[in-house]
Image 1: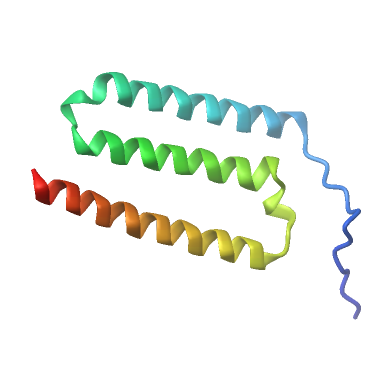
Image 2 (image 1 turned 60 degrees about the vertical axis):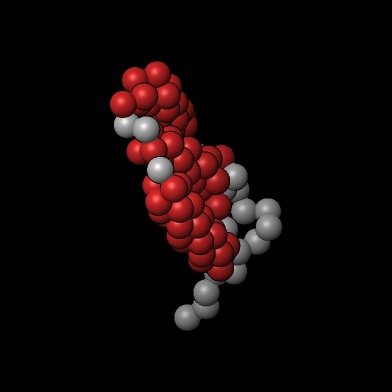
Amino acid sequence: MTQKKHNEHDVHIVSYANHFGIWLGLIVLTIMTVTVSVFGADLYTMSVLTALIIASTKALIVAFYFMHLKYDPKIYQIMIGIVLILFIVFAILTLADYVGRV
């Protein structure tokens, strides 16, 4: 049994419906970000954390679909996962330091 190797010239065709769904999801996440920034004054620190989570989600969507990370070798996805985990750890540590100072 032979395995198909990924060629750098492989074409990944994505439907218009898929692009529209991704675009709609990004628009909804942007609206959520604006809502948190306008009405999140009562949340204080949690509004920053919520905005960071929404921004990270949007960045992952863009990376996976528009930068075609979804079709790249798994090692790239593993590296992105490690970076995301480190980002979450540093965000939590920063949040803990900020809350501890108040």
